[in-house]
Image 1 (cartoon, rainbow, N blue to C red):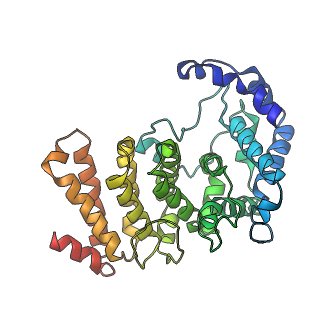
Image 2: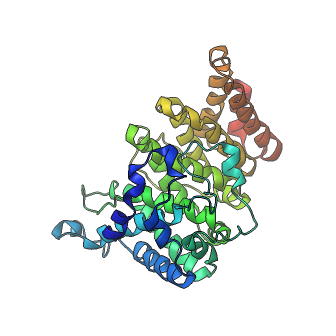
Length: 359
């Protein structure tokens, strides 16, 4: 796997402007294999990635007794699979929406289509990914993603310090998750219908909340934001956010008793009021996500209602409103949240109505 990645490293030595026009001959060779070869290799890589259990038998400090050779193989497997799925031969297909390239809100939402994407004959691995349709395969992938992405906050929330092994490839796993839901709409439909999507929402919100403190994790916040924005365009996702939030995360969240939508609103508020300036470009996505889920949430807790109304006040000030041409748009999104709650969920949201009236 290391040799494969090294052979594909030509891309590292070209400028961003030359990237789309420069053909990587090794990647072109790998991604134009026969469908059977590509499908076999992709399934093998997925089996390595999603069968990995960093906790094992759950014995404290078990990872300290010796090196975990399988983790390094998983890291290489997920990187290799992402490289194969991301490559487009110049002149033989268009790249899918990138998660870290300043994508507009409308572009991300437009990528969520019920129709199955047309086959891209230029990349055999994308074709193999799109051809996955067995629910047993979807179940293995979803359970593996939940197990691995929940590992970081679980490892930081143990009674014995550093007693649980923590994986380091969670950002690559999020990119792979983006590729899965963007390329295979049947997988997206499955996780919203048959899986507990909140098992993926919680770790993403955790990464966003913790990532605001580290400038090197801006890309991590971007990929989590785009995934949540894409998912918020689905009714089943919004309805599932009504499930009670009972977990304890190792972060300085305000105490609240509520659902996963409350957690979403609290985290977005923290990012917009206490995040780095580089997150300004994501405000559109943050507020669109809040607006998308608001018609389906039966009740908001008081802390979440307070933070949603405080965002409206923040963007309604003259200083903020006339700072640039985008800020009035943010105010419109905040008003849409209020309108949706009043129109569709008035009876179950006394806290929200009270916060609106007292402003």
